[in-house]
Length: 265
View: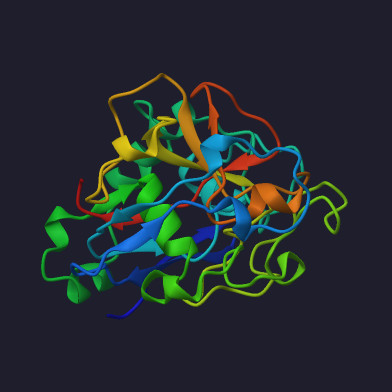
């Protein structure tokens, strides 16, 4: 399947949202979660909630090649930019889950626009697709490289955190423009480090209760899931399996998101 490109203009400058096709598991389940012995490094920030394995099936979906940038956010949000570290190609940050998903929030606005004709030309079931946040299991599958998940990298695309992530030891503890580090096997950037990324799910510390079919967990506590680590975190937080929870109204300079384009779960 071809990647999808949503072209837009801000201040006379062209930008794009690139959506990368992720082939689902097609019945060959992938292993969600982490093993304690898998990570060799700093132990701080590790809890028993970070470990455990589950076999997960996911359907095909598209996911954005990078976190949503400030240019893309401003394009759909009337020029508003909540970010602390300004830069059109930096990830948008200081965005809460609520700001993304509420009425007249980012998702409602982008979905209310005419989707580029090229999208419908490339998708037989286009009418069922829309932009949304990833489920936690979709996010981890994409971070692990989709069908290449058996490479079993600690970080998204590498076992060397410096190759793929802006984190505490190399970032200066600020965000950086997207796509400056090595991509993972799917061509996705910044899934480890730079900014934490919101997922659709409510946090459930018992991963045995996480849906096995790629759907979000929506029957637990009030906090939402964040994934990927950020620029001021240690390497352990940037692993493909590290789970973090936060109240949906919370926002700071280390929290952003990326998009999925797919049917509802």
